[in-house]
Length: 545
Image 1 (cartoon, rainbow, N blue to C red):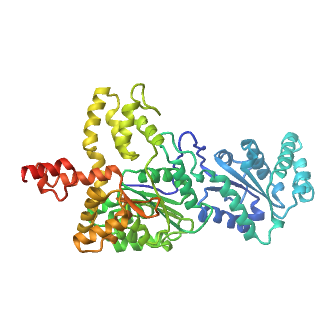
Image 2: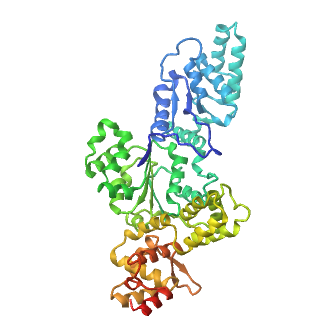
């Protein structure tokens, strides 16, 4: 399935959600001075280069003596206001009404950015020069509306005292526009910092901060970022949260779930390519994506100039990256492509240097996450702490296991807990094992043999020693096999005090390996490919099986 938005307004968590403005920026300007030059270039840079939602009144004539209801509403629905104070700005009652309304609606002046365009701020503040001439005419025309004119004067004084940008301080309009865009971006998009995860997402704040550094929203380059780790560790959860927090910063946002499963089901990537392109091609043109090559063509053709957020979830083959996201040149400036995978090697092969490994939870985080599912609060209920500690011992910090067991044990009494834990301590939950087994199923035959052998006999041993043993057993070089298992998150390396590499394995992955061997012959251990437990070894010899 795919989650896709074109300039989506994805919300943050309820605790940190900002108002959902219809417009990012309202632009107030005197059309006769700036419409066809400066304002045209500024609006294009904001709207099409930075995908900032602007409201700009494109009517050449100001119809009527008072501002239209449409513009009043647009001001109320705007996050920020850019006020371009040009030489003839004050000659327009329309502009002065806009200014008064903006100051009324935006009491927080941080939401207002004045641009002094070919005018001196002091002329605006004290209505001197051309501004004085304009008000002489206003006082004659609106002689019976003295309060209105007084309000306009006060509005100009107030806006002139707000920190803004003065065109005479810039060498060119292009430089001025660049600085305006920078100011607007920081005001419109403070939430790109990815801080403040929802309460029920435990242990994720550090990962969000690391990803914030990788995403670097202030940079306009195209970035590919990999999120990798073992099955069930929370890669997709992290990617979803990132998508929800930042998708509204992009012209096109798309989250392609279960890339591995969808591509295997269809035997092709066309379905995923269509999901990515549908917001652009629409229903009438999506049929033109009839094979993978046409999908590549349309992706490059239609997305090269768009600022895109694309998340590929659970990638397991290199061709998925090659045909769905290809190269950086496929996407417009500022695009961010995020890939989740169990296999770090895929990221290396696709030259994705920015990689974040998702690790298991520590004991405190694990207890909190488990308690949220088992007790619907952040700590165990009275009398259940010791039983909860047994669950933590079984789960070893794996979020999927903690959630699965917590849901299973919710509202059950202590006798039921003891029964469940007795079984889980012997054979882990099938849901957890099935999730972990996906990585095993993707291995080559020799890699499977090495994995099972390490799980049964060599966990915690020196890497070089393990390679030496395996090489002698099968007369092969097992170094590459060990490295592949590490890249696929099935093995890990730990430095011991002697600075040598020790091969480690998560307890649940080891349990998964043992269960794979048991399934080779449920009732006859003598037919297993490995015998590791003394009881099984003794039984085989005693029964001569």
